[in-house]
Image 1 (cartoon, each protein chain N blue to C red):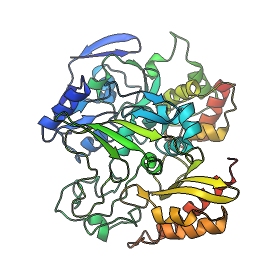
Image 2 (image 1 turned 60 degrees about the vertical axis):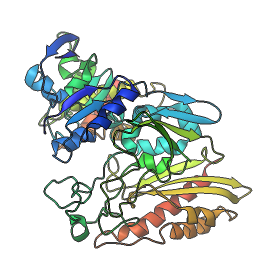
Image 3 (image 1 turned 45 degrees about the vertical axis):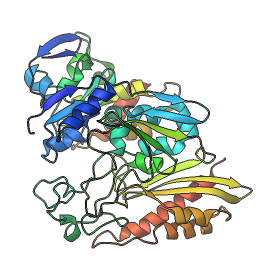
Image 4 (image 1 turned 90 degrees about the vertical axis):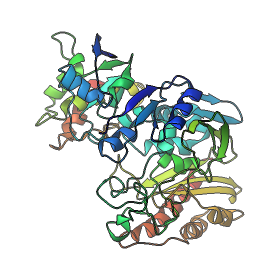
Length: 152
Length: 329
C-alpha cells in the first residue's frame, strides 16, 4: 500500500513497484493532465511538482514517493480561477497542439519560484531553464513570452 | 520492465547489507538512470534498495573542505553559494548538464555513477561487452561518432558521460563508502573509475553492495579559479562532444599550478597530468595553453567517425584555459 498526497488529497493505492508516478497519476487516479511523451525523461511532458520541486514523473517510482506532496496541472487552479501561468499561456497563444503544455506550465511555475526576483531574467535564461521541456510544434517564442508576462 | 522487490533503506549499514546479500540487487537514489535503463531492458535488478531518504543529503563546509552527502541533489549542489565561490568548476559543470527537472531528481553519487550514453549499450539487441560481457562491441564497427578517443580497449569504446565527474577529477576529491560487510573505505577519485580493459562491465572499483556515502573536496589554492567549458551538438540539455575542467594558480603572469581534465572524449574522467606539468612555470598566455592542449590529446586515437573530437577537444582545453586566465583572480 502506497500513500500519496496529490493536489492536497490523500490516496492509498495498491501498486506494483514498477508503477511510475506518472502511471499512478494517470491510470490509478485519473489525473491525465501530466502527459506520457517519451517515457524516458527526455521531453518534460510529464513534469509535476514533488515537495515544490519540478521533477519528471515518468522516471519517479510511485512507491518511492511516500509522504511527498505532489502537485499536478489539475492542482494549479484555485477553484474556477486559473493560475496566472495558465492564463498567460492562453493570452500569449503559447501552444499549438497542447500535448506538452501541462509540462511546460508546471515547469514554468517552478522556474519562477527558483529564480531570485530581484535579479534580471533574460529570455536566454528562460530558454535555458525551460530546456527540459520540448515542444514539437515550436511554440517556444510564445512560451517565453508567457513566462515573461507572469514574471513582470 | 522486469518485476522487482522495492526495499526502503532505513540505515546506511542496512541498505549496503541488503544489496550485498542479493547478487542482482541495486541501489536506487534519484532513479533517473536506473528507472530509465530498467524500462529499456538494459538493467533488470531483482530488488531495488532505495537510499534517497538516508541521512546523506547534507553539504557541510569548513575552512579546509566541503563534505557532500551522496544523496545531495545535483540542483542543490549547483546552487550552493559557497560551492559556487570556492569550487566554481563544480557548479558550472552541473549547470551545463541535464535539465532542471533532472537536476532536481538526480543525486551527486548517481551522477558520478551514471551509465554511458553509447547507443549500443542502451539497445538490448546490440552486441555490448559492457551490458553483456563476451558479446562484442557493436560501436567499434558501427556508429562511433560519439565514442571515446582516449582510454578505449578492443572490448569497449564507450564514453563516460558525467560533467560533474570531470570537474571532481581536478579537485583531489575523496570518495567515502560503506561496504555491505560493514567495512568502510576512503577512495581517491583518481582511480575510482576503471578503464574498460578486458572487463568494461566493471566501471568503478566499488564492490557489490558498496554504497557511496560522501564526497570530500579539500580547499585547494587553485580551486577558486576553476572553470568548466563544454561543447555539444545543441545549446542546452545535451551531453558533451568535448569538455574540459580546468584550474589555474597564476602569479605575476606565470602559471604556478594547473589542473586539466577532459570530458566527453574518454572512457573515464580523464586527468591530463603531462599537460598540467607542461604549464607550470610558463607564461599564462594562449600559446602556452595551446601547447598544453596538444599534450592533453597526445595519445588520442580516432575511430571511423569521431576523429573531429580530437581537434575539438584541443580547442576546448586551450579556450577553457584562456577564458579562465582572463578572469579577475
